[in-house]
Image 1 (cartoon, rainbow, N blue to C red):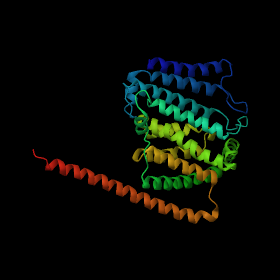
Image 2 (cartoon, rainbow, N blue to C red):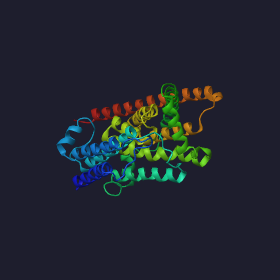
Image 3 (cartoon, helix red, strand yellow):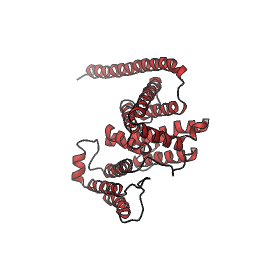
Image 4 (cartoon, one colour):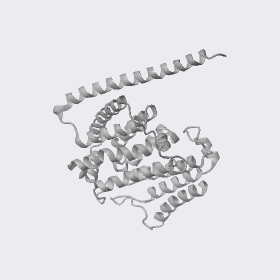
Length: 329
């Protein structure tokens, strides 16, 4: 059954590219008279790779590099869908124009609907109400009640991500000014309306943090690994095109993935939300020293929390060993 679904998904993707080659206009290569052929070939090549992954011997080779079970049909289908998503997104980034003047601005409802779809996909992907109940699904997705130091770590990491994002913006403005202006125009066109009021700011801070973290870090990362998930996450932000901003998203995704790996998805989601809030609101120049001081406090608190947690774990292990040793043989 999974092989049929994987083959069907790959076949539809290939058909979209093939129909566009034939002139059906199923894809758009952007403005400026760009040829659609490279984009079509990208879609068809992606479909071919995805179809190959339906083969168990191929998955066994892939399993040497990513933490998936080649015998598990759910893992197999997830891998096929991930490859299709990544390949089509990368093809779009590489072979379409950054100019997106035909796209309309994103509203609060649009954003919530999109992220709700990601949340539903994540829950369904890990088998909610089929293989797992609600509490088991939450545990699989890494959703837990955060400790105090999780909050400190999330906020501290968000500050680091924000500073890194500003550095990447400066780099893009200096080295690729035309791309920088186009990306800024795209971002303002798509999301500018959201940052004009508190409801929009709250939506842009919370909705992507919840939907994207639960899908990418919660559901996908334990199956396809940190780097593959970061690449998939970066490709999800196709509005940045081939730019320093996309590279910045990839690096931040590695940071969020590391938080998920060593703590939980709740912490990575809090960090994502705090980062989005900082980007939406910004920091005035007069507040930079205060922000730097707060950041140092958060980093110090996070370091103490991590040390204390590891110390408690070590003491618990030592206590278990002592109990075992004291039992009569």
